[in-house]
Image (cartoon, rainbow, N blue to C red; front, side, top):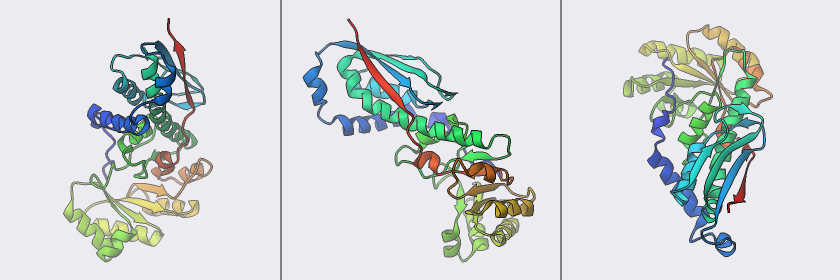
Length: 293
């Protein structure tokens, strides 16, 4: 089976990011930042320094920069730390501009940067947890609405692999699809006939369903990827032995950093982790403002 498509960096283009940033700023700023208007002298200049305060992988500097530019197009931005690299802490970004503009942009820029860095960091932790095994870490469609492509970019920055982007670029037959089609075999036949050019995956909850999915694929001349859903490690190991390299195997089922190593050691090819994008803790980043003369 072909690899499922990864997020193309160019697909998250400036227009998409710009529209997302404008919506986020409108939500936060509304008709104006009354605190800044009341306390900051117009025309006062400052430099904002963003610092990483906890171990992890920073990601999303382009989005943060877009926030500052949307508020004040003339800001000067200087990257002061690495992106997409694990490190303990340190400076990340300096932004020079009007104090008022920097304060208006501060929270929205940090919200994007902390969320995306959190995704990259949790992904990196999972990748580290399975190091030395055959397994690769996959994301899912369990993303924050509107942030999917950015979150999937963050997964790549953390060393993970992208699953399908949405419902349009790969076929994943789950138990409800099979039930509505009249069984796994019929669902596979219909799906392959409908879109023979797309990667096809079949969810299996038992070893019997593994056999059924492989037989269904063979009947139409394809080898689907098998999604082994909620199988305990012993059953995953049995599935790996049963399939014997005839198909790619993906394990899924609410795995954590404490359990993912055991899953990886069963020999599966992929482990999908919804928590990468729906439950990643934000990476701790701070912004301090220094007035300029």
